[in-house]
Image 1 (spheres, chains in turn purple, orange):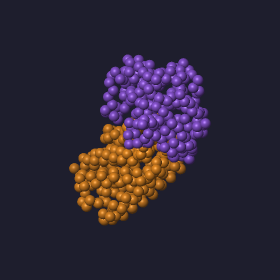
Image 2 (tube, chains in turn red, yellow; image 1 turned 180 degrees about the vertical axis):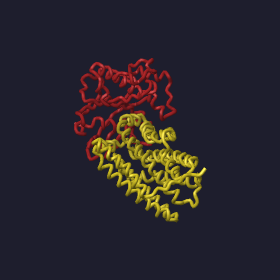
Image 3 (cartoon, rainbow over the protein chains, first blue to last red; image 1 turned 90 degrees about the vertical axis):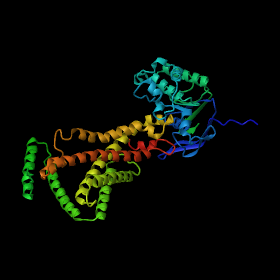
Image 4 (cartoon, rainbow over the protein chains, first blue to last red; image 1 turned 135 degrees about the vertical axis):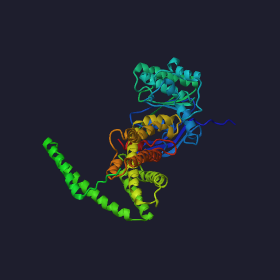
Length: 219
Length: 266
């Protein structure tokens, strides 16, 4: 008998209410290993909230969120979050070099010691030159900062990538480059990708599923 | 050398009103429009401090440890209300947090000073306990109000940064490290500056009072040094305790930032 692999993420009747406002309503959704899911919807529809829930940054008011067959908010939450890399709409870049930004995790995890090669690879994976490691991170352009945020997440060897409007602040050509890079990364590293965007998927190749949210519901 | 000891009488105080009258005259001439405020302030100073003098005289006559412990508890309670009132962003349970931080700070610092530095006998002597406890509570209250207000503002402005840390698997303590550093600095820098500058420009208040009361300046200096050390320790202890307790309120047991609590501060 072959064991059926559980979906990477499973949301069962998930609702979220904060300060009396219903942000998500009765969402049920499976995201399988290798899926490339696009979540679209108008502003305030709950896209980002749903994405945050997949990283355990919100607990549902009712319903369950499972990751790899187990409740996402388990005793190994730190490791789970590292496996589910999240890139926010505004890439937070800190004072210091690109290297210091990439190795942010060392601030609380002394055992996090990626090799020089891994660090350079993480940059190359997002089309940043390996010799940028010592550059001042704050001097990077908007697109480069977004790539740096992506590289920081990739250094954790994630199984999934959650991307919250990663191209919202970029011009069209740069946005296309980043999306192309994400498609390639997904393919090369076998990642599951959930991408939130208010734009349509027309220019994006490889999307396997597209769901639309409106007022906290899947439409 | 004989020490001078200047007795000041009530008529002397009335003579000092000449200074205030001069000040009011100057303000009137300059048309600043603050005459009534200065007048009210002058009367309030007189009434409040006179009442305090009589109250203190009565307190000093109460020679029982239970009375002193009760009095300190009431002082902490009043300071906690004031600390709660001063707080712009309401943190759940903040009144109890302030009270707990103040109580621990007072017990540890007052206990050290009374028992090991001044070696006061009896240990509850009101002449030492009331003014020292008052200074600890006043300074502690200032510091913890400064640190909490700054912490709220840091958490609000660094919300995205904190969530980035959490999303990368950081524990809440690491996620708020920078916010905590900045808010500790905000509370301690005034005290550190005082440590740096004391004695360079002016004679500190406590020393001035002691010298005017005829105490040898070298003895007054020792008291002032002890008070300076007491202030920085009080600030540090009250600040750190308050921060540790306040920051816990902003995270769930699942290491999630309670963003809705920060929204209130919008």
